[in-house]
Image 1 (cartoon, rainbow, N blue to C red):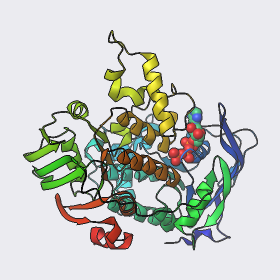
Image 2: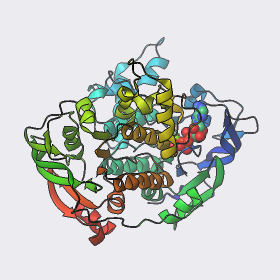
Image 3: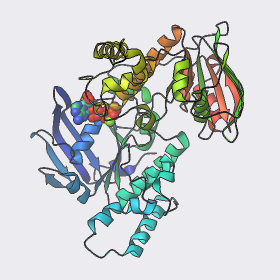
Image 4: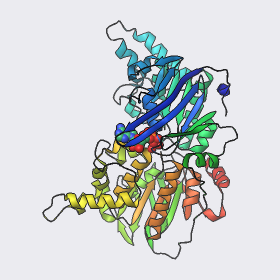
Length: 504
Ligand SMILES: Nc1ncnc2c1ncn2[C@@H]1O[C@H](COP(=O)(O)OP(=O)(O)OP(=O)(O)O)[C@@H](O)[C@H]1O
Ligand SMILES: [Mg+2]
């Protein structure tokens, strides 16, 4: 859907010219311009590390740009901006980690800034609650206001973060990969909310690596490449292929890569695996060198199944065989020792320890094999292994001792992959491995995955992106309501046919 806010007469809420920012030796932004009109949904697109989040952090006063910058917010020239000033002007950001308080209630989270701001004054709790309710009405959602935030699924927490922004009368909201941890149907709901906001005159700057959605939700897209401005484009008439080309500077072709691996030796065999309430009677085999795609909607039981395979939960019935031997992993540790690696869907909570260094994050699963004869961690060995995987996966980093949190999303995902590959697994389970990863880097990650399969690794690829499983799997299983309902040969189906099957 296109917003009409791109009409030339609509006033600007934000205008930025000649914005540059350098970190150490990295030119994160180089003479970038960016303009947003009232009520517009504007996407910021570009590969991992091209400077999107940095631009947002400049508008919101987290970083100071170089002095060349000329910035106007709501028509007012800005000399310097602090996060507090930026909020006071009506600018809000929904960060990927949402920055909410897990132990406070929904209502307290939404009204947090008001509560803090008003502490010395008398706070009329009743009227504040009414305001929270009217904002949720405005968003068209219902939430239990007294529920502690940490009892809510991630999609609802996101709504809480948006509601909090609206409580502060935000007129310009930045959403930096807001749907990276959302499923397709949750994302659809979020997009609906964004459309509502836009219709009410709130401008939304949306960052997402899912290009179909970028084209669907926004009226204009600003493309960055390596910190430089490529241009501003209307999304009407734009295709994913063209946008990819603008972002990467090269055209990218996707083709079905499936091969028949039915003659290879089974690596994983699952027989009638059941965990009541999660999945029932699951049976399948993955052979050496095979990439088995597993797709289905939210609640289909995909991730729950993966959790049982890696020992996070215990199945009620059925059996798991690895290389012909029955296994009953009781913990992730045991699963790793048996040769199973798991790249989780949520790199922020399960995958990486953000404040720790890239080097420590990559080697955390294999610390044991890095111990030297007297049982101490050998820095030489660690450095060697980390360098090996950084090269192998082309991870773009400054110094391995920098914190993982300084890396761009796609590069963080590669660190997760490095961490697991270093365990030398026989079975690699990838749960939504390209969440938050740009198209170019996705292609890179899938080249790596294909290469690993060619060397005999068995791979289970879980994803709700139909194109991802279609182009990268040898076979596809479709899960629904905790059961496997269908199997497809990627060579004999298409994106459209699969979408009908899965979303119908
Ligand atoms: N605080 C920092 N210290 C050092 N380098 C940084 C810092 N913040 C960002 N960078 C670097 O600046 C560049 C731009 O990063 P930025 O986070 O803006 O990318 P992005 O476009 O948001 O990428 P992604 O799509 O992966 O989120 C990257 O090379 C990144 O490593
Ligand atoms: Mg970013």
